[in-house]
Structures are given as C-alpha cells and as structure tokens.
Figure 1: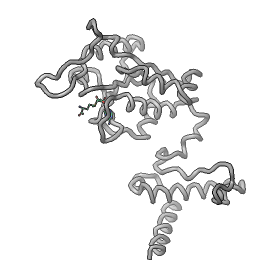
Figure 2: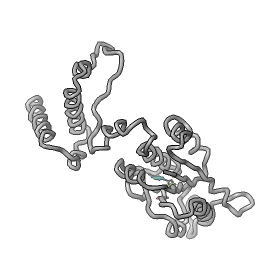
Figure 3: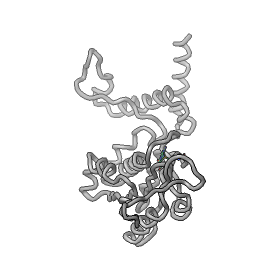
Figure 4: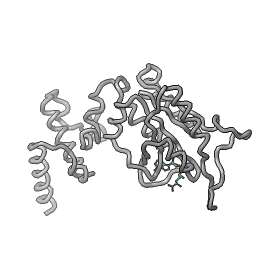
Length: 249
Ligand code: SAM
C-alpha cells in the first residue's frame, strides 16, 4: 500500500508519519508514505500557489496548475492514475469501514486544501471523491489526511502485530470495545474485574462481548441499529434494558 499526500506543509505531515507505529511500519517496508510539496510545482518565481477568488470575497484560493502538476508527477511515478481523494468538509464522512476498504487498494493520493480551498476546475479533473473527517472546518487538509493515512495504514498487513489487534476494537465490528485494564491489579482501591484474573478464556470472551454491548448501548446506542448482532447479543441487550428500567424505578 502506498499513500501520497499533496500538501503545502510536508514537514507537518512527515513529523507525524515518521513517529511511532507508522514510522516503524514505514521503516520496515509494510507501507509507503510520501509527502509532496505542492509549492515545488509552482512556476511562480516566489513559489506562489494561491490567488484571490474570482468574484471577490475573503481569503485566497489554491491554484489549479501546481496541484495538477504534482498529481501528474505522482501518476508518472506510479505508471497509473492513483485513487484521488480531496480532503474537504463537504465530503463523505470518513468511517472505520472505509479505512478497511481503502487498505485493499494499491494506493491513495490525498490532496490537502488550504486557505479558502482549491480551484474547482482541478478538483473536477483529478478527484475521485471528497472525504471529510467531521462537520467542522479546519485551517487545512493536513490533519484530515493524516487521520485517513493513519486509519488506513493500521489496516494494512504487517503494520500492527496481528489482526487480533484491531478486530475487537471500537467500530471494527460495529460495536465499541470492552474496557481494558493493566497492572497493578488494585489501583486507588479499585480492583480489576475478577473474571480477567482467572485465565478462563471462554468466560473472558463472554464478559468482553457483554461489556462491548453494554458500552455501545450506553455511549452510542445509534451504532446498535447497524451492528451485526446474534440472538444471544439481543437477549443480553433486552435483559440489560429491563435491569436498567427496574434500577431507574
Ligand atoms: N471554504 C471551504 C468550505 O467552506 O467548504 C473550507 C476551506 S478549509 C478553511 C481549508 C481546507 O481544509 C479545505 O480545502 C480542506 O482541504 C481542509 N478541511 C477543512 N475542514 C475539513 C474537514 N472537516 N474534513 C476534511 N478536510 C477539511
């Protein structure tokens, strides 16, 4: 998997992509991550890449040509057109299941906007889809691109120690993850749940599933509408609901 990020701030992206799990996975060759400075493709002697908006108004707009030349350069390196995503507050909301789908691709090209945004004509020409990380506006597409790169990278083979690291995590299977504990076994007079200390794997699995269901029901009940639940999950949730109603009463 290869991810190319086109940005005006490559150092900002490199700083994040070189650290921790992604930095190690990159070093070990499990994932290729490249940051391209759009300014390198400016024809202007001051390396300008923005101009005022036609029709007037506040702010600056990123020009089409430096972005197009940067993208063309990556197409030439790859020998093909990459799946091209413009990070935008107007895009489809990014979710875990999309990270899993993107991780199956050979590569992604993530375009980061800045200022008031990007000249629409280059978006029409090169972009396959627009992605948003939430309904708010940030100063640039770098943080959103890093969010997407991180979420996609950890779904790629070899980046995490094994699939086990993420299959029970929040959102992977439509639920939130169960609570986690580590040493010491008692902290501030709070003991770790007994079931986790006895080494009985079937009981631990069942406890974790129930905790996962309960957490999702309490914190994000909306997720339960789409989560793949079996008969025993549904029974557990029904009991939980009844128990809570009695407690409330
Ligand atoms: N004028 C644009 C609008 O109202 O839709 C917003 C421009 S924003 C200040 C600058 C850049 O930040 C955008 O071009 C985009 O690349 C990025 N950006 C801002 N918020 C984002 C979000 N929620 N998700 C993804 N990208 C975002």
